[in-house]
Each structure stands twice: as structure tokens, then as C-alpha cells.
Length: 205
Ligand code: SF4
Image 1: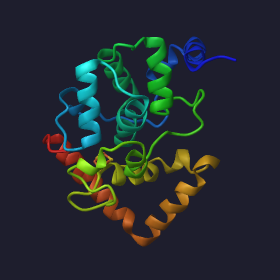
Image 2 (image 1 turned 60 degrees about the horizontal axis):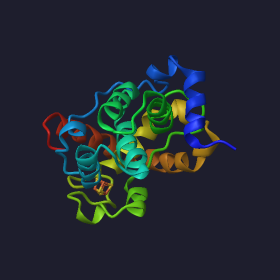
Image 3 (image 1 turned 30 degrees about the vertical axis):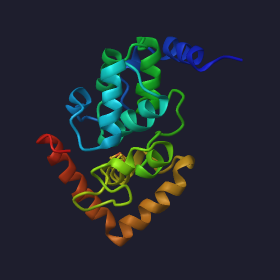
């Protein structure tokens, strides 16, 4: 019987140095500035970054399902998020963060993760109390104050369809993607994501 950190150690020894720059989804966006400043209207991200800034530490759910989740949905290059974790967490050792962030957080390589760990606002709301105080509406996909995680979640599945649709663990998600593509909702979601990227450029996300 081994623990998670021991498993990470083994993965690191097995998969480095390729793991450090692994990027099987070819994510190419830069890490948004608010990972450093905490200046965002997304309450879950704002509070998670504030916790890291104050204590150099945050809960597993904040790490995986807020900070890594957002970066994956946004399409951040995994190496950049790994560098951020290494620079900001007191418990960051390269051999721990690299498998956890690049592989589990961002599905960078496929060396052990069987699917990307991504979610919309629904899961974040189940696991935290952030959404009640948020500027954004957790139940909306599109529209000016719709939660960014929602449109980004569907857009992530849509734009990575060639790589992910055949994954048997993602069949249910792709049945929802099919519905959105057929109904035309996906066009609105793509437009919303363009709007979110514009807001991020101007520091308004
Ligand atoms: S509504 Fe969206 S952005 Fe706001 S706290 Fe919930 S998940 Fe985060």
C-alpha cells in the first residue's frame, strides 16, 4: 500500500523530463494575470488566490477544482501553471507539483490521468460556498454575468472534441455537447468565451 505522494514520486521518476513540458491538448494560452494579483470578479478564484498569497497554501479542492480547473478550461499551457504553483506554495516541491499540476490538474500527458478533471460552476458550488457571494450567476452559461466556468467548460469539450470524445469516461458529457451543438447553443457559448477572453485582456474578468 502506498500513498499519493509516493505515487507522485514514482510518476516523476518515470515520466520526467518529458512531463515538465507535456501538453497533449496543445493548450497555448498564457496564465492570466489574476493568478498573481487576485484581481478578478470570480469569487472562487479571487479567494483561492488570496489564500495562497496570505498563507502559501490552499485546500485540495481550491488547487484542483478552482485554480487548475480554470487554467485547464482557459487553455493555459500546463508548464506555466506548474511554475506558478512552484513559486507560490510553501509545500511545492517540483517532484510533487509536476505530476499533480501538469498531469492531474491539466491532463498534460496521460501518464496516469484517465480524463481531464474539469467542471462547471455546479461542482464548485457543491464543494464550496463561493458562488453565493459571486458577481457571476452560477446557473447561467451565457450572458454578461454568466459564470465563466460554465461557457469555458462547454467550449473546452467542444474545442478538444477530437482528443476527448472517444474517452469512454466522457460519453455522458459529449451527449450534452451534441445537444448544444445541434440546438445552436454552442455558437452562443463560443461567442461568450470570446467575450471572456476580451474581458481578461482588459483585466475585467
Ligand atoms: S459563480 Fe462561477 S466564478 Fe463565481 S464563485 Fe461560482 S464557480 Fe466561481
